Length: 110
Image (cartoon, rainbow, N blue to C red):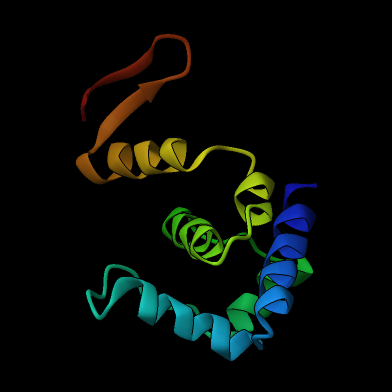
């Protein structure tokens, strides 16, 4: 279910901006301004997101949400099912190695 929602939102974002899949991939370069924070997706990766075969990684979801916001398209962020701050928190938890106990919540660094 979530994959289809994300796929539709990515398609909607591209269509609203009149981008093909390659142009959306180029937006990742513009968004990061050469910082190389994440590797931009390949056109085929975007195709897999749109078809629901794969979901974007968390960093790609964050970037897609920000790209959508920059272009006045809130549908993508809504389709991800969580506010951008929640994804940023998740990335921070993973990057610094904090364990998350499902019963107790966030724990100490692993």
